Image (cartoon, rainbow over all chains, first blue to last red; front, side, top):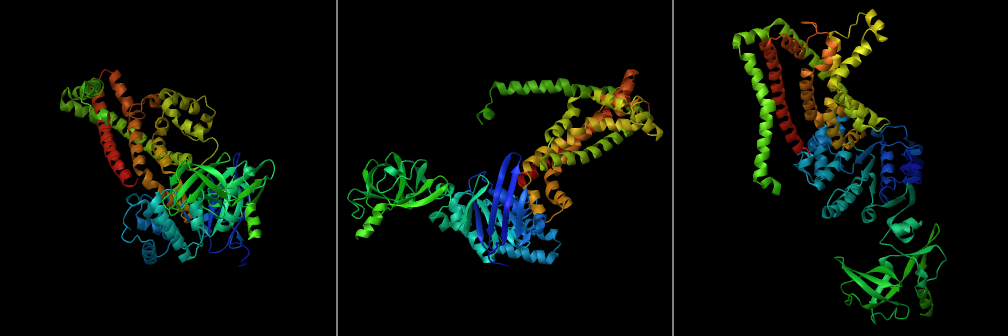
Amino acid sequence: MNEKNGYVELRNINKSYGDFQASRDINISISRGKLAALLGPSGSGKTTILRMIAGLEHPDSGQILIDGKVVNDVPGSERGIGFVFQSYALFRYMTVFENIAFGLRVKKVPEERIRDKVDELLRLIGCEGLEKRYPSQLSGGQRQRVAFARALAPDPQILLLDEPFAAIDAKVRLELRTWLREMISRIGITSIFVTHDQDEAIEVADEIIVTNRGRVEQAGTPTELYARPATPFVARFIGNSVPVANYGSFRFFEDAGEDSLGIVRPEFISIFKKGESVQFAKSAEEGTVEDIIFRGSSLEIRVRIHGNVLSALRSFNDPEIRVGEKVDVFLHRMFIIRGDEVYPALNQSLRTESVFL
Amino acid sequence: MKLRNNSGPAKWILILLVSIFLAVFLILPLVYILMTALGRGLGVYRAAVTDPYAVKALLLTLRATLWAVAVNTLFGIAAAWCLTKYAFRGKKIISTLIDLPVTVSPIIAGLIYVLTFGRQSFLYPILDSRGIQIIFAVPGIILATIFVTFPFISRELIPVLTAQGTDEEEAAALMGAGTWTIFRRVTFPHIKWALLYGIVLCTARAMGEFGAVSVLSGHLRGKTNTLPLYIELLYQGYDFTGAFAASSLLVIMAVIVLILRIFLEHRGKKELDLHK
C-alpha cells in the first residue's frame, strides 16, 4: 500500500436527506493505524460520514475506499469494520459473554475459539467475571468497554466510534479517554471517532477532521489546527475563542478593513497587576477585572477592555487580583478573519522590541 | 407523592364509586348469566352446553379465532417492523389505515365484504367458477374476524419497537447477521411479551365478534353459526337457559384470557425491568 493514500478514503462524497444536505463534497484520507477524530458541532455531518464508512448510509455520489478498494457496493458487514454506537446498542437480552460472542457466532467460529476470544477480550477490557451479567447490570463505563470488546471481537481492520464518551459522566469520561487511547494504540487498529467535544478530540486523536455544515473545514494534527486554522470556522471553533470586532483599537494591531474580525484566545493574553510586569510595561493596556472564575488548576480572569470581555488564565502563584481592579493587559497575538481568509497577527511591539534588544 | 398518601374522603368516595360502577355494570350481569344458565339445574345446563349445535358453534368460533390470531400475528409483526425500522413515504397513511377497523363499526366491515365478494361484485364470477364461496360461508366469517382484530397485535408491538430504536439491529447487521438471525436473537426477545399480550387481546376480541360476522355468516345453524351468533339465535327463540349456558362458555373463555393477560403483564414487566 502506498503511504500517500489513506487506508480509509472518502472522495467527493455528497449525501442529502430530502432537502437537508448532510455531506457536501467530502474528501478525507486517514492513514493506517491512525486514530482520527471527526469534530464538529451537532448537525455538521460528522455522524453521517461515520455511518457512510460503516455502510449504514449510502452516499448519493462519490467514492469510499478502504485499503485502496472502492467499497460503495460492499455491505457494511464485509468491510472489516467494528462499530461502537453512541448509546452502545448492546444487546439487552444477551449476557456480556453473548454480546461479545455475537459477531463470532454469526461467522460460525467454533465454540472453543469463541470462548478463548471472549475471555481474552474480557481480560483486555478488565471485565473478567462480568460475563454472565446483562447490560442493564453494568455501569456506564463497563458498558462502553463491553461495546468496545464486542466491536473488536471479529478482528476488524477499522474501528468506528460514534460519540463514544457522550453517555458517560465527566469523571469516568476522562479515565475512559485515556484507556481507549491506550487500547487503540496497543492494538494498532485504524480508528475514527465522532465527537463534538474539542478537548476530547485534541487529547485522544492523532488527527482531527473538523466538519461544519456538511463540509470538511480542515484536517490536521491538533497542533496544526491550533496554530494554523485554515478557515474562519476553525479559528472560531477551536480553543476558547472570543471574537473581537474592534480589534483595531488595541495598540499594536492594525485594522485589516471592514468585515474583518479578530479572534482572541485566553492563551494569547497576559494579565498583570499594575507594576507587576516590567517587560510589557510600555506596551500593555489598561483593563478592568469583571469576574474571576475558579478553574481548579488555574484562575480565569475576565477582563473588560475596549468594550470587549476577554478571558485570560492566571496561576495561583501570581500576585492576587480582585474583581474591579485595574490591570495591565497584554495581547501577544490574535487571528484575523477577513472574508474566507484567516491569518495570524502578532503584537507589533514584540517585533520592534526584539529589534531594540 | 402527597396525593398518594392522602387518606381523606376523596379517596374513599372514588373507590366506592368505581366499586359500585363495576358491580352494577360488570359483576351483576356476570353473576346473572351464571345463575340463569344454572337456574334449571345442572342437567339442563349440561344438555344445553353439549348440544351438537352448541359444540359446532364453539368449534367454529375457535377456528375463526385461531385463523385471526395466526394471520394477525404475521401481519402485526410485519406491519410493526416496517413502520418502526424503516423510513418511507406513506408511513403515516399505513399507520392510520391499520387503526381503521377499530374505528369502523363491525357491521360496516361485514357489508364491505358482502359487497366485495357477493353476487354483485366483479370478483364473484371468478370465485364462483372455481367453487370458492366466501360470504355466507366459513371463509367469510374468518375474513370478518381477521378484519375486526386487525390492529390488535401491531398496536402492541409498535410502541415497544419504537422505544427500542434500530441501533441493536444495526449493530447485529454490521457484524454480518442475516435478517432472520437479527429477528430471532435481537428483536424477538424485546417484543416477546408484547406479542403474547397482543395475541391474548386479539383472541378475546375474535371470540366475541358479533356484528361483522353476523352480516357475513348467513346464520346456517351448525354450519356458519359462531358462538355469539348461536347465543343470539337461542335468545330470540326464548330459550334463555340455553342462551345463558352458551354465554357462560364465552365467559369462561374470557376469564381464561383475563388470567393469561394478568400473568403476561406481570412476567413482561419483570423482564423489562431486568433489561431496561
